[in-house]
Image (cartoon, rainbow, N blue to C red; front, side):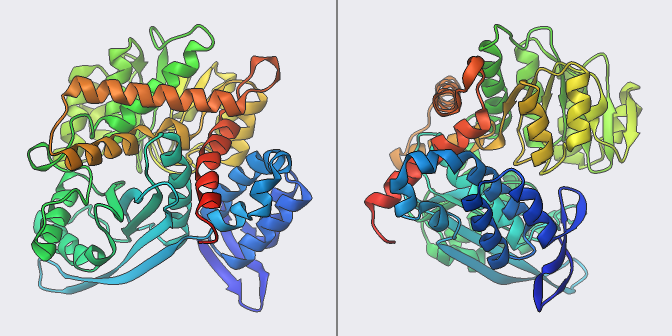
Length: 480
């Protein structure tokens, strides 16, 4: 978020970076402390070229750090300037979205689609409807999506999109009118073999339905151009559950490397939307006990655990009533902490499932001090770089989002396959394929992230493993 700038001197731009007000020059200095000269020069150029986009800078810097030595050992990627090319979107689409509210007043929002990289398949990635959406956040998400999709082993490129529209507090008719207006422009840029959007924050089954109906109406085709569709019109079983389930499956694979499991473990989960809900469900299936959930107003702590019956209430509260998580505390007598996050509570495992940069350095230190042995990211980039460094320095299991939460896009890919074949797989078949994909992602992370003393740096493993497949395809396809 840009607070202010001197257009004559980029070093004087002030942005919020990891929760702190910093100048662009300060951000470059922070990054250079952990980077080689080549990486520091690369990041300085990237920041100058993409000002006031701190989330994008953060995401690229993490990948560049992981690739530092790998690129030196594999000069063909440096010669082809893959890193410089992979951070540039192939296409950025930005457009006006006018719509009329229930009072008859004209409203205007801004729509985006970032088509980041199509080296290994058509663009694939979600649409986010939230007031915080801007170009920098979507570029960060699209960049992460490239690596995430590569890790799934499925032929999907990376993209992301959305709008600064806020569905909260809007009627169904207002959401429908917005979605129809949004798709009236977006439709010309997407297609089953070009770009296949899905849902994200603020975009669930309702929004996907309205957008798909408008797309079908305009192009006169029933085709798999969106994923996350309803089961009776092209959707896939397990798709709503996939991100949450997949994160738990990935964490389970990490725990196995130390002879551990979810059974009997206490688990912290943030968020209370789709990802968090099905994370709780799968942790319960595996014998763990989730004690927290949160939303933007605060978090609840239930020492007895959020069992299946309590989870049903959360699903109704959030999916139908669209209420606040505080109501859980009022109904079940749990503790409610306003305007805070759950990371100071004691638990064995933490599964952040809300939004970016929700675990800072102080909270990471508290998690480790309180006995947390595993952190696996259900959200996109929920841990700050300082928090990640704490986890790695302390040697705990840490699954980065581009690996751990790839289950959602993996099942989107499986939905695309089912659409192309005009058939539906059973729940068990999709779930088995999801588990296999998450195991494969874990194996890739171990292959590229193995360090001395049997330690696996899953951040390096995910970044390098995701990079290689895309980079090799880019080299094979020439200067495009």
